[in-house]
Amino acid sequence: MYSLLGVSGFAGLDHSDGTIPVIPGLNTVANATNLTSTATGVNVSGVASVAATDQINFFGKAGMMMWDKEASVTVKNVGPSAATVTQKTATDGVDLSLGAGAEYKINDNWGVRGEVEHFDGLNANLYSAGATFTTF
Image (cartoon, rainbow, N blue to C red):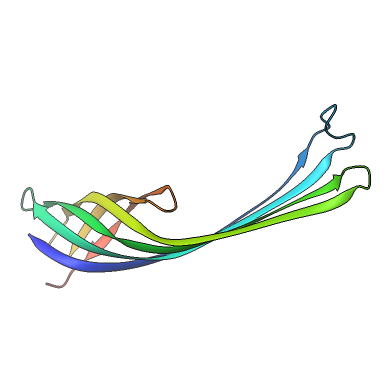
């Protein structure tokens, strides 16, 4: 069994343009829309592992995620004056992160692994696969 401390980070940007169609009683012209959102964060986790065989390890992770989310939506042609309305929101927090996975050791140095992580405050899951390299 081994334990270690892991630090990871992420940054993301989502952008979409669209149109709200004409809805009788709500709008008389189509409304062009724009949505932009960003999320950034830093995660610090402790990792514990147990060997199932000489080549297969299972591991668990627990830690804290410091995160920030921002979103902006713009809708054009709103109301009789065809106004443009923009709404912005920003939230942040520090929340629990949990994860689990498995690693297959190809040889003494190289391996492949897969894992799932859950970030409570973002209500998001991360599924990942990757290669590992160790020198000890």
